[in-house]
Image (cartoon, rainbow, N blue to C red; front, side, top):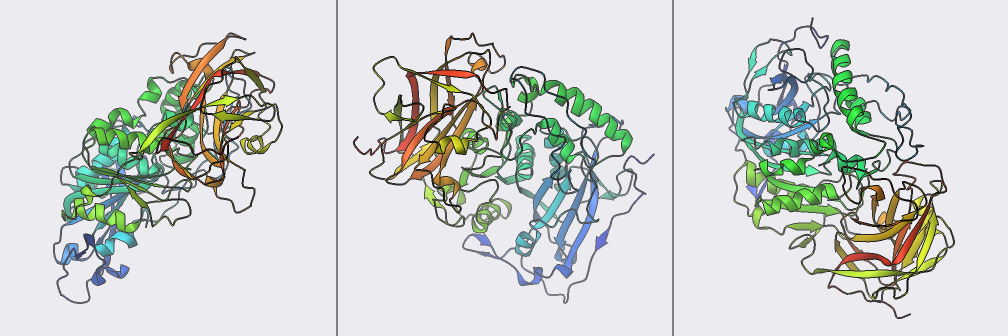
Length: 608
């Protein structure tokens, strides 16, 4: 039985002969960048075809090596002139469709901490989309006219690719590796998902670059960790580099921004567009249920081997390709630590690396000219000096994303830690000062998920959060790096969420306010995990514990006249589980502190 429920097919082409026999020079380089070539612009003169590349794994248990569906778009000159060109490759689990915006099958976040979650509904089936031989048209208009071949593939278990969606496990790295091996003449390509005629990438120069955003940005990093020969450069945009960091935070169940109740098994259902019913049943049972649901642990949020196997930081030593990381400091879907942690590790390993960061939300690639320099340098072997450019490119507040400011590195080399300490003021606002509190002082808050973080930050008077503010700044303050908090707390229950926001006050209530006007950064932690991220330990009611953790990395200039506010609360309505309101947290201010990475190492504070 044909497992894809498809008739046997042959390689599909669309091909038109060139208008004349003149040779085309590829590439054309100016200022270290590949230029658009007039003869390559007309899409009527592109060759499009698709095929299946055989991998080294059998993730769906059918006894056959899984094959990935691949589509190619290339200039006709790769045939008429026998040109061998480099490839820009994009892989995704989304190309064939998803379950869409239906959140009825998400986990119910109305759950007590430490308890088993309520059962969730079955996900709807996906109506697979796409017309062969084109999987996707992304990147084609940008790069093919500059002399690149553009290749797409559907990730395992999606579209017409075989296998199961394993979401971060080995097949998601080995699948693009197999495609790169095929592009470089080492792998096997076929005209059919079963059997078929051999297909060769005779038009590939043996050099491949990858890019993509979000999940599509994760896959280039996954491929690079295999060390596959021929993958010369990757530009991951907002990549998810650890599924634990995506769905958990310091032992606490935390959902990605905008997707309350999502977890890794939900993502599996969201993308699982491939396979017939027999294969689907196997994948659902052995991957989603026996691996994901059994090990994701929505009761405690603890780290374990399941999560460890889906952390690319642990595989980063395999990366040989040059890497331009791109992310946003205000991405609350894939939070910025995902890229910062990889950037720092690659630097230590001596990999050619740079960082592009902007002030917006999820997504946002580097400027095309910047990407062009990287692709030109490593795919056309043009010595344009990109490896000697500034290491950090950060879009400043109010600037266009195409106009980043250069810095020697990230964090800013002149950033130094400045520690501030809270002064009592509940249920109104307390203060932040440069000296520790001298007298033992405690303040109490009451958990209630009904109030959003935005509302709590703006409230003048509430028992549901504690907030402490610096005096107004007499000059702008440049934060660059990773803030860190230490909170000494006691709880009247055996478990509690702990959420911390840094906000810029006064709060800008204008409907056109930018996210940087109000929220600086955030962080979340489980006080039950202070000894080990792998094991929760029930809190003893009334006993004090020191909970210390990083907030999300940032690089932001806080304007003159503003104040930084440290807000401590329990359940974060948009990110954490929602236990029954009423849990009380008592904070020991004398043993609580906030450390800020400040360029210049001082705070210009208005005297009080």
